[in-house]
Length: 433
Image (cartoon, rainbow, N blue to C red; front, side, top):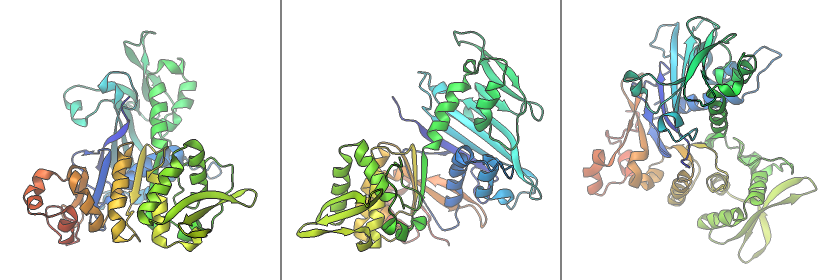
């Protein structure tokens, strides 16, 4: 079975990111560019979709999960500053192999969202569509199969595809009412289908939505600047929680290590081998009970009988343990995003970190942003996986993929990718001037 991935994203009128064409994503994606070039805004559009599906609505204040996600995205300040308000911000997400039918056009889908932004009021949903297909450009040739259209011709009204017969060979549109502009259709669909006059399973979106939501909710986002080293060192998380992913601060590290050890017999050996690469005298690292109900981490070294604890280890060592836990996990997220993993690490560990990232990308989809030429050196062998955020003018940035053909002459001269980044070579950008 093929692995589902986020195939592309297209963004229009959102802050300083102007993407005239969809940005194609691979299993491995390395994002480079100057500070303020749009990398964080690009990632925010990914996190926004997950937040729409996973944020808990604040019913006491009448705030939906969509409205909470919009607030995290930037509220009514998300509109491109050069676009007159009110206007729409468009974000399209393309998914590949979400649902295995044997028909590539139906295995892949596009989620198309347009947000109405009025700087004087709230942000609301102007249009929301889910349809089959792999490429936005194909729509110009032939219309796609729409799973649903919200709204449909008038506010509060929607249309959803329903099979004509049990053989599922043909379908028609059925109307849906009470379509909200403050709740994502992907969230509201179960309720809308329950209230419909036809059985929910007669709608093709019934199964597609479940697969899509499960895929998106497994996305994980990390920023090295947000990793709380004090919390990681001193927290003793409670036994019994089922965490298999690090929290954004990393404070549940002992619990994740323990749970992954229970899930996979080889994981402990994998982590120990990874730590030997950065500290060769490592003998064994393991989560242990601290008191009756909590966990901590012991670290043993050759020739030293007493264990060390995370409070004894350097900042860089603790960070590398966090990245190793994420990247060697037997239960990888469906999308793993890491901002600036090189922060606080010794330059000699960069080839190790790069190799961990490459190996994880063979099993799931990975997006990494970096400003480190020392880390970039070790991605010279996969230039087609590098996306450069480059300046169109002083206010907007676009994204261009690198290629071997683009840099062939310099590569033949012995340049590495990081070398070109260090000197601010205009072919890849990365510098603010």
